[in-house]
Length: 211
Image (cartoon, rainbow, N blue to C red; front, side, top):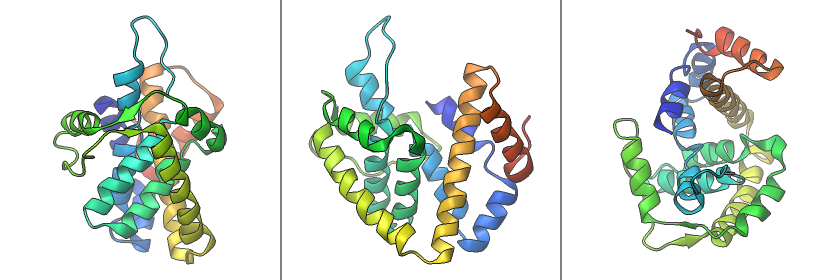
């Protein structure tokens, strides 16, 4: 996971960051937090579901990631940041039927606990300052219920009722997250796709140069 995050962070730059900072001075930090946390939800999947020789599915991991980053940023006193980053992390797989993914996740025999956060903070050492840790284990039904409620409030606050600056900040941030995530993942799995070509061109022109 650290390698994936580090590769994604390498392309955080360029015109997208310049434009984002015109909207909010801490835009770069918002995007970086979204990138760092976007795959957090895979940690408890690995802890509870990994079996040698069996392919592991991470359906709904972005829901767990959203819960984690929202709690982390609110604990740091960054309520406004938590709105934009949480919504971006939750929707960065938006074409994949979020409602269905939430339902499947709620039935998983997985718990989110202290060990997952400690493992994550250790993995992200020197990239992320440690923060919030749950006192007790949280099951997936509780996580989904919390994030479902969060989605309704964030969609209203950020998208439906947010001002133009807030909406533009959100769109730039989620575009940067999707591009950085896909680019980093493609570096590991190899191969070429039409969508990958679009992402590469976007990064080359608007984020940073692809080495």
